[in-house]
Amino acid sequence: MSDDRHRLVRVVLEDQQAAYRTPDAEHERTVAIYDLLHSNRFVLVGGPPGPFTLHLSIVESRVVFDLRAKDGVAVAKSGVPLVTIRRVMKDYFRVCDSYVQAIRTLSRPQIEAIDVGRRSLHDEGSQILRERLAGWAEIDHDTGRRLFTLLCAMHSRG
Image (cartoon, rainbow, N blue to C red; front, side, top):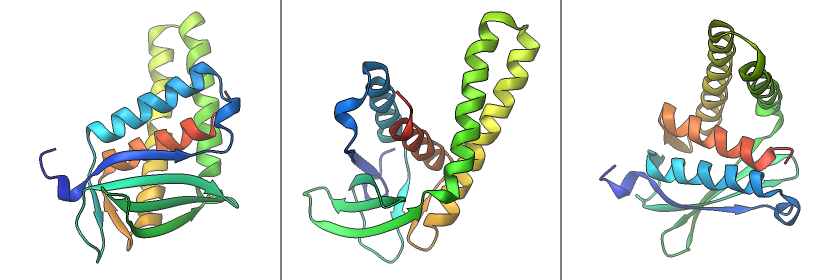
């Protein structure tokens, strides 16, 4: 995207469990951040234009979106109760596990059916995030999907 006024240009994960993550889990986080930064639309409602740095953390069962200017100055903060997306995340993890198992043993149509379910849950997670952030930030569907991926990567069991 060419308009930096409506985008995230940096993501910082403030994750207290980072020291305990496996290399695979760290790789998932790195890829999720790369994908989000590669393409996103993030407009702070009623606030200044970007570009923005997003500090993302989980504090007291809330996902905290701490938005800062590119130079690090605090701009706005919002929280989303983790409970609002926890069920979708659990279902998403289950379907992803099934997908990995299916690749080894099932036919292509069966694998594709599981993948449709995975994408549907991904879309549901995106929609929940978009709804919960509405009024604070406007994000498009794909940005919501990438944020959901990042939250799953932060919350992964690895």
